[in-house]
Length: 220
Image 1 (cartoon, one colour):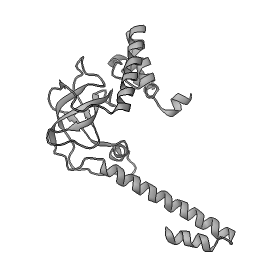
Image 2 (spheres, rainbow, N blue to C red):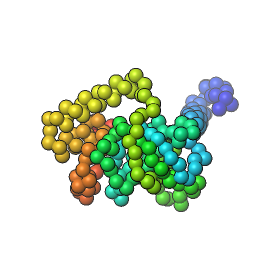
Image 3 (cartoon, rainbow, N blue to C red):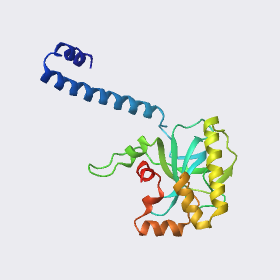
Image 4 (cartoon, rainbow, N blue to C red):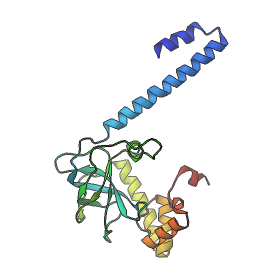
């Protein structure tokens, strides 16, 4: 990269060469940034996890996978030996009434064996999860227990959580149950109140993406 910068300086009088070297410099800078970002993400991903482990974590989100199986996105996870890096996405067989985003749980999870790359042309879930900060995906092999949260969120996070809870309570107390569940999903991204029936109806109609907040949706 330093050599390219030197050539840029030496060829600053030649417009064509200068433009070509500028493009090369920008491309190499982009590669360097991408590599640094990947290394940073790699340091925040847990590696060498046991296939079956007992974990405790904070329920960051509760939604359904493509097979309509409920799943949890857990953060602040530990396995009673150490704090684990990254988030964990765990599929579960049932959803107790108390299980909502913001709760803390304990469960026995079966995590995948060593990573195996997908065939060329297939969607790479491992790569997608890596850039989402998810260390592993798996499924529970036992009951889920509600537990007190070990870690308390930071002050900015606490303010955001309180604001989300305040908005959620206003929606829940002033709207019909089913309507409130949709509004809650669209305003604060909490889809845990949406019934399986409504979720199935949205998927059948091809409108499941409507319930996911994104920059495009907010712009529209």
